[in-house]
Length: 116
View 1 (spheres, one colour):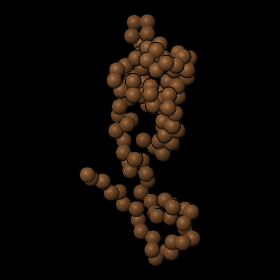
View 2 (view 1 turned 90 degrees about the vertical axis):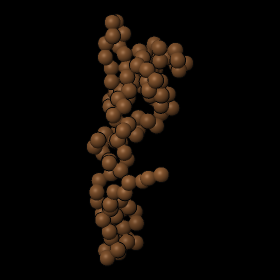
View 3 (view 1 turned 90 degrees about the horizontal axis):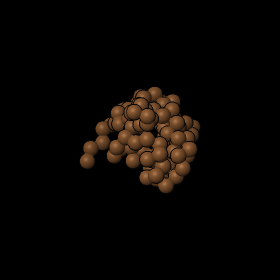
View 4 (view 1 turned 45 degrees about the horizontal axis):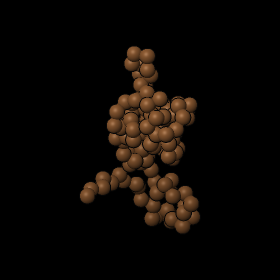
């Protein structure tokens, strides 16, 4: 996932209705009217949010009989945040503090795997 794709996805996830849609699609694939009924919002509103989610790569759609079904793209959510961050210098990660960091104190960023 590129940085631009990650930003688009994170912006998309900042909406409560979209998160509810994603939770529902994590359970089962659904069509617009079923999602609207389940979430208590109108079908046009669900369609609007599904378009945003599809543009961000979070959902996909397919035709089933005469319904357009939507499903969660689970592989998108398997990406770790550390995989999105570029390997770069500390100055690039913290530009606001660049005047406080002396050149001899700059160390390369290293990806650290967190464990429980």
